[in-house]
Image (tube, rainbow, N blue to C red; front, top):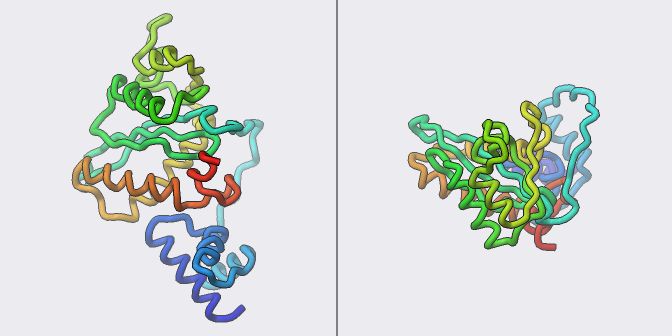
Length: 239
Protein backbone atom coordinates (compact mmCIF):
# COMPACT_ATOMS: atom_id res chain seq x y z
CA UNK A 1 0.00 0.00 0.00
CA UNK A 2 1.47 3.43 -0.96
CA UNK A 3 2.73 5.53 1.94
CA UNK A 4 0.42 8.41 0.96
CA UNK A 5 -2.65 6.20 1.43
CA UNK A 6 -1.40 5.00 4.82
CA UNK A 7 -0.76 8.59 5.89
CA UNK A 8 -4.25 9.64 4.78
CA UNK A 9 -5.81 6.80 6.79
CA UNK A 10 -3.82 7.66 9.92
CA UNK A 11 -4.55 11.39 9.59
CA UNK A 12 -8.30 10.84 9.23
CA UNK A 13 -8.31 8.38 12.13
CA UNK A 14 -6.60 10.89 14.43
CA UNK A 15 -8.84 13.77 13.33
CA UNK A 16 -12.02 11.77 13.93
CA UNK A 17 -10.82 10.52 17.31
CA UNK A 18 -9.80 14.01 18.41
CA UNK A 19 -13.29 15.31 17.68
CA UNK A 20 -15.06 12.47 19.46
CA UNK A 21 -16.37 10.94 16.23
CA UNK A 22 -16.65 7.35 15.08
CA UNK A 23 -13.26 6.40 13.64
CA UNK A 24 -13.73 2.82 12.47
CA UNK A 25 -12.49 1.49 9.11
CA UNK A 26 -15.86 2.00 7.38
CA UNK A 27 -16.07 5.62 8.50
CA UNK A 28 -12.48 6.25 7.41
CA UNK A 29 -13.30 4.73 4.00
CA UNK A 30 -16.30 7.06 3.74
CA UNK A 31 -14.14 10.14 4.43
CA UNK A 32 -11.48 9.02 1.95
CA UNK A 33 -14.20 8.73 -0.68
CA UNK A 34 -15.63 12.15 0.23
CA UNK A 35 -12.14 13.66 -0.14
CA UNK A 36 -11.67 12.05 -3.57
CA UNK A 37 -8.79 9.90 -2.38
CA UNK A 38 -7.94 6.27 -2.98
CA UNK A 39 -10.17 3.99 -0.91
CA UNK A 40 -8.73 0.60 0.06
CA UNK A 41 -10.92 -2.15 1.47
CA UNK A 42 -12.05 -1.85 5.09
CA UNK A 43 -9.98 -4.93 5.95
CA UNK A 44 -6.88 -3.17 4.58
CA UNK A 45 -7.68 -0.03 6.56
CA UNK A 46 -8.14 -2.14 9.68
CA UNK A 47 -4.80 -3.86 9.07
CA UNK A 48 -3.02 -0.50 8.67
CA UNK A 49 -4.58 0.84 11.88
CA UNK A 50 -3.61 -2.30 13.76
CA UNK A 51 -0.03 -2.07 12.48
CA UNK A 52 0.17 1.54 13.70
CA UNK A 53 -1.22 0.58 17.12
CA UNK A 54 -4.38 2.63 16.56
CA UNK A 55 -6.87 -0.18 17.12
CA UNK A 56 -7.64 -1.58 20.55
CA UNK A 57 -8.76 -5.21 20.36
CA UNK A 58 -12.49 -5.39 21.06
CA UNK A 59 -13.50 -7.39 24.14
CA UNK A 60 -15.13 -10.72 23.51
CA UNK A 61 -18.84 -10.27 23.03
CA UNK A 62 -21.31 -12.08 25.19
CA UNK A 63 -23.34 -14.81 23.49
CA UNK A 64 -26.42 -13.41 21.80
CA UNK A 65 -29.55 -13.68 23.89
CA UNK A 66 -32.97 -14.60 22.63
CA UNK A 67 -33.89 -10.90 22.52
CA UNK A 68 -35.12 -9.96 19.05
CA UNK A 69 -34.04 -6.51 17.88
CA UNK A 70 -37.01 -4.33 16.99
CA UNK A 71 -36.85 -1.89 14.11
CA UNK A 72 -39.68 0.17 12.70
CA UNK A 73 -40.24 -0.37 8.98
CA UNK A 74 -40.99 3.27 8.13
CA UNK A 75 -40.22 6.79 9.37
CA UNK A 76 -42.67 8.01 12.03
CA UNK A 77 -43.77 4.46 12.78
CA UNK A 78 -42.15 4.75 16.20
CA UNK A 79 -40.38 7.53 18.08
CA UNK A 80 -38.10 6.70 20.98
CA UNK A 81 -37.73 9.26 23.77
CA UNK A 82 -35.49 9.35 26.82
CA UNK A 83 -33.72 11.62 29.27
CA UNK A 84 -29.98 11.34 29.87
CA UNK A 85 -27.53 13.54 31.78
CA UNK A 86 -24.56 15.73 30.90
CA UNK A 87 -22.41 18.00 33.07
CA UNK A 88 -21.46 21.66 32.95
CA UNK A 89 -17.93 22.91 33.61
CA UNK A 90 -18.75 23.37 37.31
CA UNK A 91 -20.04 19.72 37.46
CA UNK A 92 -23.71 20.75 37.61
CA UNK A 93 -25.76 17.84 36.29
CA UNK A 94 -28.10 18.76 33.43
CA UNK A 95 -30.96 16.74 31.98
CA UNK A 96 -31.08 16.18 28.22
CA UNK A 97 -34.35 15.15 26.57
CA UNK A 98 -34.17 13.57 23.15
CA UNK A 99 -36.60 12.14 20.61
CA UNK A 100 -35.27 9.70 17.99
CA UNK A 101 -37.09 8.23 15.00
CA UNK A 102 -36.67 4.46 15.34
CA UNK A 103 -36.52 3.60 11.63
CA UNK A 104 -34.06 6.26 10.45
CA UNK A 105 -32.28 7.19 13.72
CA UNK A 106 -33.17 10.78 12.79
CA UNK A 107 -32.74 12.98 15.86
CA UNK A 108 -36.02 14.87 15.98
CA UNK A 109 -34.97 17.04 18.89
CA UNK A 110 -32.46 17.28 21.71
CA UNK A 111 -32.98 19.76 24.55
CA UNK A 112 -31.09 20.63 27.73
CA UNK A 113 -32.63 21.85 31.00
CA UNK A 114 -31.81 21.86 34.69
CA UNK A 115 -34.71 19.41 35.06
CA UNK A 116 -37.73 18.48 32.96
CA UNK A 117 -41.26 18.40 34.28
CA UNK A 118 -43.89 16.11 32.82
CA UNK A 119 -45.59 19.15 31.31
CA UNK A 120 -42.41 20.25 29.52
CA UNK A 121 -41.89 16.78 28.05
CA UNK A 122 -45.49 16.71 26.84
CA UNK A 123 -45.10 20.19 25.32
CA UNK A 124 -42.02 19.04 23.39
CA UNK A 125 -43.93 16.02 22.09
CA UNK A 126 -46.76 18.32 20.96
CA UNK A 127 -44.28 20.62 19.21
CA UNK A 128 -42.74 17.70 17.33
CA UNK A 129 -46.15 16.39 16.30
CA UNK A 130 -46.95 19.84 14.88
CA UNK A 131 -43.65 19.86 12.96
CA UNK A 132 -43.40 16.26 11.73
CA UNK A 133 -46.89 14.83 12.13
CA UNK A 134 -47.87 12.26 14.75
CA UNK A 135 -45.95 8.98 14.96
CA UNK A 136 -47.88 5.72 15.03
CA UNK A 137 -46.30 4.91 18.40
CA UNK A 138 -43.75 6.00 20.99
CA UNK A 139 -41.29 3.89 22.96
CA UNK A 140 -39.98 5.09 26.32
CA UNK A 141 -38.95 3.76 29.69
CA UNK A 142 -41.27 3.97 32.69
CA UNK A 143 -40.09 7.34 34.00
CA UNK A 144 -42.82 9.47 35.57
CA UNK A 145 -42.54 12.10 32.83
CA UNK A 146 -43.51 9.42 30.29
CA UNK A 147 -46.09 7.27 32.08
CA UNK A 148 -48.19 7.11 35.22
CA UNK A 149 -48.78 3.37 34.95
CA UNK A 150 -46.37 2.50 37.75
CA UNK A 151 -47.29 5.46 39.95
CA UNK A 152 -50.27 3.80 41.59
CA UNK A 153 -52.80 6.01 39.81
CA UNK A 154 -55.14 3.39 38.45
CA UNK A 155 -56.39 4.39 35.03
CA UNK A 156 -54.83 7.85 35.29
CA UNK A 157 -52.73 9.53 32.61
CA UNK A 158 -49.93 12.03 32.90
CA UNK A 159 -49.42 14.97 30.52
CA UNK A 160 -47.36 12.93 28.03
CA UNK A 161 -49.97 10.18 27.90
CA UNK A 162 -52.76 12.70 27.40
CA UNK A 163 -50.99 14.03 24.28
CA UNK A 164 -50.60 10.46 23.00
CA UNK A 165 -54.27 9.73 23.62
CA UNK A 166 -55.42 12.96 21.96
CA UNK A 167 -53.42 12.10 18.83
CA UNK A 168 -54.29 8.37 18.82
CA UNK A 169 -50.65 7.39 19.26
CA UNK A 170 -49.89 3.93 20.65
CA UNK A 171 -47.78 3.99 23.79
CA UNK A 172 -45.04 1.40 24.31
CA UNK A 173 -42.97 1.13 27.47
CA UNK A 174 -39.93 -1.03 28.07
CA UNK A 175 -39.92 -3.57 30.87
CA UNK A 176 -38.42 -2.17 34.08
CA UNK A 177 -34.74 -3.09 34.29
CA UNK A 178 -34.61 -4.09 30.62
CA UNK A 179 -32.79 -1.26 28.75
CA UNK A 180 -32.24 -3.47 25.68
CA UNK A 181 -35.78 -2.55 24.61
CA UNK A 182 -34.49 0.96 23.91
CA UNK A 183 -31.16 -0.14 22.50
CA UNK A 184 -31.03 2.47 19.73
CA UNK A 185 -31.42 5.46 22.01
CA UNK A 186 -29.04 3.97 24.58
CA UNK A 187 -26.42 3.56 21.84
CA UNK A 188 -27.20 7.06 20.63
CA UNK A 189 -26.41 8.43 24.08
CA UNK A 190 -22.96 6.82 23.91
CA UNK A 191 -22.32 8.60 20.59
CA UNK A 192 -23.58 11.89 22.03
CA UNK A 193 -21.44 11.73 25.16
CA UNK A 194 -18.31 10.77 23.24
CA UNK A 195 -18.81 13.83 21.00
CA UNK A 196 -19.56 16.17 23.93
CA UNK A 197 -16.62 14.93 26.01
CA UNK A 198 -14.21 15.72 23.15
CA UNK A 199 -15.04 19.42 23.55
CA UNK A 200 -14.48 21.99 26.31
CA UNK A 201 -17.30 21.68 28.86
CA UNK A 202 -20.16 24.14 28.54
CA UNK A 203 -20.41 26.76 31.28
CA UNK A 204 -24.17 27.31 31.08
CA UNK A 205 -27.28 25.47 29.95
CA UNK A 206 -27.48 27.87 27.00
CA UNK A 207 -23.90 27.03 26.02
CA UNK A 208 -24.70 23.32 26.27
CA UNK A 209 -27.78 23.78 24.09
CA UNK A 210 -25.60 25.43 21.44
CA UNK A 211 -23.37 22.35 21.47
CA UNK A 212 -26.37 20.04 21.27
CA UNK A 213 -27.73 21.94 18.28
CA UNK A 214 -24.35 21.57 16.56
CA UNK A 215 -24.29 17.86 17.38
CA UNK A 216 -27.83 17.35 16.05
CA UNK A 217 -26.91 18.92 12.72
CA UNK A 218 -23.77 16.78 12.45
CA UNK A 219 -25.51 13.57 13.54
CA UNK A 220 -28.47 13.99 11.19
CA UNK A 221 -26.80 15.32 8.05
CA UNK A 222 -23.10 14.41 8.09
CA UNK A 223 -22.54 11.17 9.98
CA UNK A 224 -23.27 8.08 7.82
CA UNK A 225 -24.77 5.16 9.73
CA UNK A 226 -23.72 1.56 9.11
CA UNK A 227 -27.20 0.20 9.88
CA UNK A 228 -28.67 2.63 7.32
CA UNK A 229 -26.50 1.44 4.45
CA UNK A 230 -24.03 4.30 5.05
CA UNK A 231 -26.80 6.86 4.64
CA UNK A 232 -27.28 9.70 7.09
CA UNK A 233 -30.35 9.73 9.36
CA UNK A 234 -31.71 12.71 7.40
CA UNK A 235 -31.44 10.76 4.15
CA UNK A 236 -33.13 7.73 5.71
CA UNK A 237 -35.91 9.84 7.24
CA UNK A 238 -36.75 11.82 4.10
CA UNK A 239 -36.37 9.18 1.36
